[in-house]
Amino acid sequence: MDNLLTVRQAAERLGISPGSVYHWLSQGRLPCVRFSARCVRFRETDLSRLVEQLAHPPHSRYGKVHSK
Image (tube, rainbow, N blue to C red; front, side, top):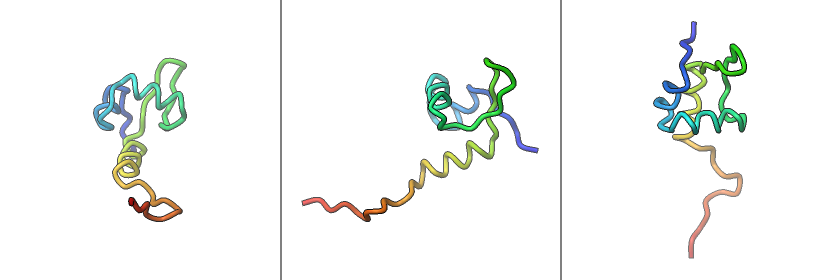
């Protein structure tokens, strides 16, 4: 079973503020488990996947940008 993390724990894991967690949540950038309108938790595996994506962003479809 996956561990569920609080907003504060998720913020620490992502290296952002709890306010940013709520902002990302409102933008749909963070998947969550909603127990009520005010109670949300985050799956540890979802956050680990997001951290990995942030550390290794996908390549641009246009290739490398060359500077002059």
